[in-house]
Every structure is written in structure tokens, then in C-alpha cells.
Length: 105
Image (tube, rainbow, N blue to C red; front, side, top):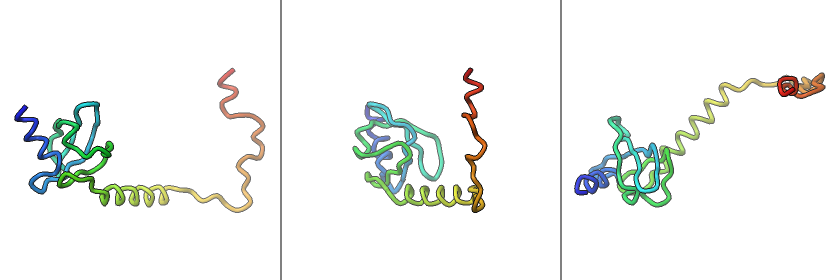
């Protein structure tokens, strides 16, 4: 149990270390140091109650900045991949039935 207590301090971002929550279970969570390293298990109670998978915990608190930055980067990435539809192009014209309807028969 002493080992879990020590890891719990690290999970809460002790000693300036931030961790990302990889997996949440009922009693434990798997976290990974942000700078890289091996994942380890900590008691779920050592993390803030509102934490979700993918969140970053620093100094015992949820760090919202990395999540906001990741969401912004993801939106920019999706925008670069999007294909504009030319004006006047009707994507539904000529589609008399569902594309999967034949496969469902």
C-alpha cells in the first residue's frame, strides 16, 4: 500500500510531474508521465473527481490547457482534410435508394 501512496503523489502531479490519464476504472487509473515513460497504475482517489480519460493532471488539479490545445489542433487537422463541395453540386441527385440497401437484401 505504501507503494500505491507514493505513486498516488506522482499521479497528482507531485514534484512538478504532469501525467495524462490513459484509462479509468472503478478503483484505479492508468496514467503516463507527459514527458514520456512507462504507464503505471494509481488509486482513482488520487486524481481529481471530475477527471476523464485523456485529461492531464498537474499538481493535483486538472490542467485544461493541454486539452484545449489538443482540441484546437484536431479541429485544424480536420479542416485541412476537408474537401469543399462546389456550388450547385447536388450530392443526393440520382440516389434512388440507400447505398447499403442492396447489401442488406
